[in-house]
Figure 1: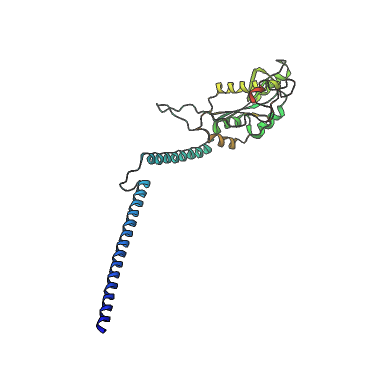
Figure 2: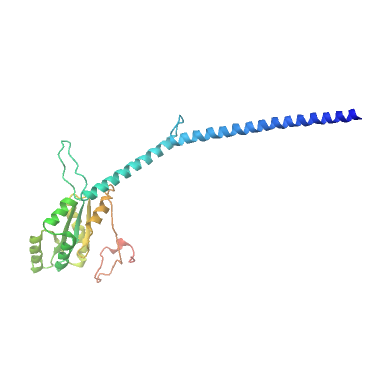
Length: 270
C-alpha cells in the first residue's frame, strides 16, 4: 500500500510539471507575439510620421506635397503683405516707386483721389473741411506727395449759368485751387447721381490712382485710418469698399430724393 501511494504521488507530480511546462511555453509564445505586434505598430507609426513630416526615406504623396507647398506660399504671401503694409504706413501709404528697365523711376501713383460733394451755398462747410483734415496750399500739396491722397471739392454750375453764385465759386477756386467744377452738371438734388458719375469719370481720366472715393462736405475723413485700410487692399483688383445702398429708394417723381432709376435697387426697403 505504501508503494502504491508513492507511485500515485510521483505520477501526479509529473503531470503537474508537464502542465506547468506547457503553460510556460504558451505564455512565452503569447508574450513573443505581443512584442512582435507592438514592434510592427511602432514601425508603422514611425513610417507614417516620416511620411507626414518629410523625414526619412519614405516618399510623401503628390497631394501632401501640394498642400505643404500651398501652405508655405500662403505664409510667404502673408509675411510679404505685412511688410508692405508696415512700409506703407511709414512712407505715407504710397506704394514703392517702380523703375523702368534703364533704372529711371516711373511716376508715383496716388493712393486715392477723394471727391468731396459740395453745393453752391456751402462755403462754411468747405472751410471747416479744409481746417479739419484737407488743408490748403502747402499742406494740401504735402498730403498729396507724402501720403498719396488727393482731395478736391466737386461742384456743378448754377441753373442760371454765370450768375453771382457761379462767380463766387470761381473766385473761391482761384484762391484755393481745390475744386473740380463740372460745367455740364446743374446743382440740384436730381442731378446728384450724374454729378458723382461724372466726377469718377473725370478723376479716372486725370489721375492714375489706386483708388477713387466719394465723400460729402459734412464728412470728416480720418486720413491715416483711410490710408491704412486702402493700403491693405492694394493686392485686390477692382475692390469696392463701402455701402452700395443705404435707406429707402424713392420712386415718386415729386419726392425730394426721387431716384429716376429706382427699379435698379429692388424694393424700397433699406
